[in-house]
Structure formats: structure tokens, C-alpha cells
Image 1 (cartoon, one colour):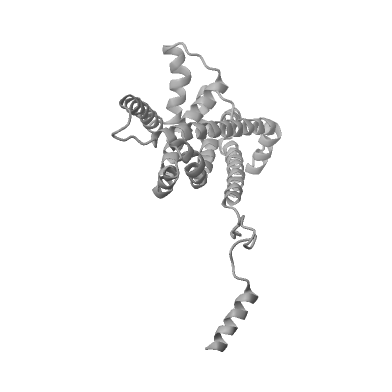
Image 2 (cartoon, rainbow, N blue to C red; image 1 turned 135 degrees about the vertical axis):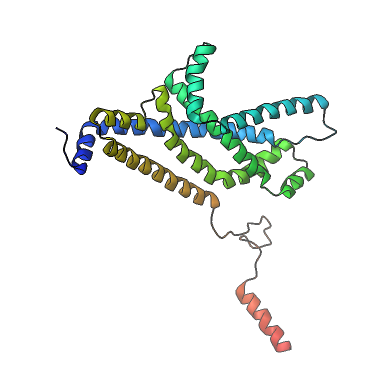
Length: 271
């Protein structure tokens, strides 16, 4: 029998539906992780293509083809950033099957929807991260004969990825929460389970309180892990300059304190 007090109803729901809630939370985090990874890959590719330079002396065919590709990618970014994910889910899962006969299973559709939505946001993030790097580094790389591909791979991207790490973490947290819109295509994630429990016992406040706590735990743990990764990417605060010249100090060029003090004392006595 359903208890009359709030805490009692919370424990009643956890006792009966605890496993279902955990399973829903697991589906939520799996979809969010996979989709965020794929979205970052999509965004990285699109962002790099957007920053490929064009110039007057370039091959006209190559320049035209690059312009068409950039136009298509810009349209993709604007469409998926400018429409709600729930509408995208309905359009892709139901609309494509109705109009074009393209049928997708729920899991594939869910990961595809969240991935391309994340990719649209990440593309602009990557583009901004690349453009934030000092142009002098690109000029320096080209001056020593590096191609655009080599410059991006070895010089620009390592710095840009570090700069956009907070946004990657932000997108992961957003995806954990936004997977609730996938309930419209019958994905049994955390929100779907909580809504079913609430409808069964009319315990909307209690069921969604539990769901809110679970969402908070998931996002909090992910944010702490991402902060730890950011600190690891920063490296140590102090560095020793390594040199390959055996005639110099192995840990860098510096003046030994005793030698410096001795020379300073001799100069003072001469004065």
C-alpha cells in the first residue's frame, strides 16, 4: 500500500522501481557518452573544414568545391542549432520513415539525433578554438615548410582542444539532461521511467524528485571527472628546460647560486 507521507512514498518507489530507475539512468549515461564522443568527432571535422583558408591564387575548381562544402556545413550548423532536439527527434525517427521509407531502430535513432545535434554546437566551438590560437604560430609553422594539415595536427589542434575542453564537458552535461527528449521516440531512459512511475501512482512530486537527484549525481560526477582531466592536461606548474648539449646543465640554462654569489662578492670587493 502506498504510504501517506512524502519520505515513505520515496522509499516505496525506490523499493519497487529502484532497479528500473538505475537501468534508465544507465541508458541515459550510455547515450550521452557515445553521442558526445561522436558529436565531438563530427564537430572537429566540420570545424577544421570551416577554417581551411581560401585565397585568390588557389585552384578555381578546388576553391569552388570548398565553397560548396562550407555552405552545406554552415546550413547543417544553423539548422541543428536553430531547432529543438525534440523536433529533430520526431522529424528523423517518424518523418524519415513516413516520407522516405527510412526506418531506424530506437537506439540508432537516439544516438544519431543527439550526435548530430552535439556536432553542430561543437563545430562552432572547434572553429572558435582554432581561431583563438595566435596567427603567428600558423605563420611560423608555414615558414619552416609545414603544410596546412601538419600545422593543424601538430601545432593548432593540441592547443585548441585544450581550450575547448570546458565546452566539451558542458556538452556532455547538457546531453545527459537532454536525453529526456528521446522519450518521444520511446527510449526507456531515466525520464521515461520516472514518468511511468508518476503516472502509475500519481506521485509526480516524489517520482521526479528521485529523477532530479539521479540527474544531479550523474552530472556532478561527470563534471568532477572532466575537471580532473583538464588539470591533467594543464601539466605541472614548473618546468625544467631540457637541453641536448652535454656542455650545458642537463636541466636547463641557469646560474648556480654558489657560483653567482662568489662572482657577486668579487665584483663588490673590486668596487
